[in-house]
Amino acid sequence: MDDVRYDPLAAGQVARLLTDELVCPVEPAVTAFVGELVGDAPVLGVLFYGSGLRQVDMEGILDFYIVLDRQADWARGRAAREANALLPPNVEYHERIIDGRTVRAKVAILTLGQFRVLTARGCLDTTIWARFCQPARLVWVRDAVAADAILGCLIRAVGVAAWWAAMLGPESGSALAYWESLFRRTYAAELRVEGGNRPSMLLAGEPGTRFAALLPAAWAASGLSFRQEGETLYPAVPVGARARAERQWRVRAGLGRPLNVARLFKAAFTFAGGARYIAWKVRRHNGFDLALTPFEARHPLICLPRLLWRLKGAGVFRR
Image (cartoon, rainbow, N blue to C red; front, side, top):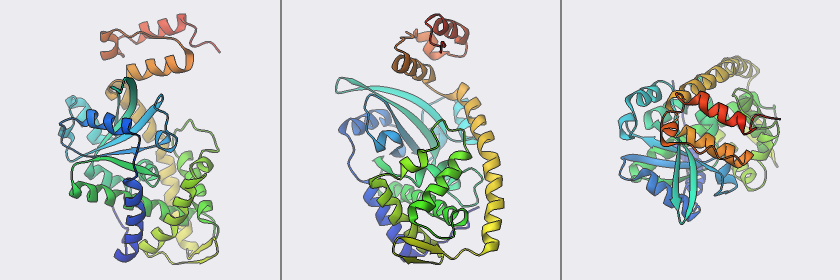
């Protein structure tokens, strides 16, 4: 269900802010990696987001979302396609040699239709709109029509996030206070390994200016009344509406962790390249080269006892 309605003129400000952000240049190696990753696949677009965008580390893991028209537009097994249709997104691990060095990435996959559903206010899954109200770059796009469709999803993500920020946040405060309150809620609803200061880190520095500009623009676009005195915002949220939103949020918070656990179980069977990803993590953090054979890389579940025994023998599990 999508019960968000935007004022076209006010939404234009949100669109301009996001468009300026989406087209900002990225490292040439990122663009080259995505070009090789997409190849001839009929992809609508590729979004670059996450910690690798906030602080570029080409020795680490980059994060991308591939947006498709249909599940069949990305090459993988039938079971993986069906799993992605049932519980998006699927995640894959990819490596490419770019300018003589290995570039690594986690790549999530979903269709444009799923993107739209998961950025609707009525959606019970908070994962996608919570990700994409944050900064992103559109590093590959098929054409202008695809760009507009993806931008529309990002506008929806920001609008839904801003609405929840008003409903669940303080009665008044700075824009950053509303965003921080919201991100504490979304992080608490998921299985996340980041520390408790992660919401504050998302808003630090230049991103804070971006978030501060987006919140009142998104409120105006959705018709939410508010006034502003200096940096302090006063959204007109009736007590009854706030109480209803709290009840609705409890449902979403209750579903957040079970959904993420389900995705983890699904990933055990659909995380393409997952064994290579784990081997890289072990090497990066423990210095041990798991040295996967081609068969182990293709069939990690079958070889799991042998891999665990090898890791134990290397002392990886010792504290």
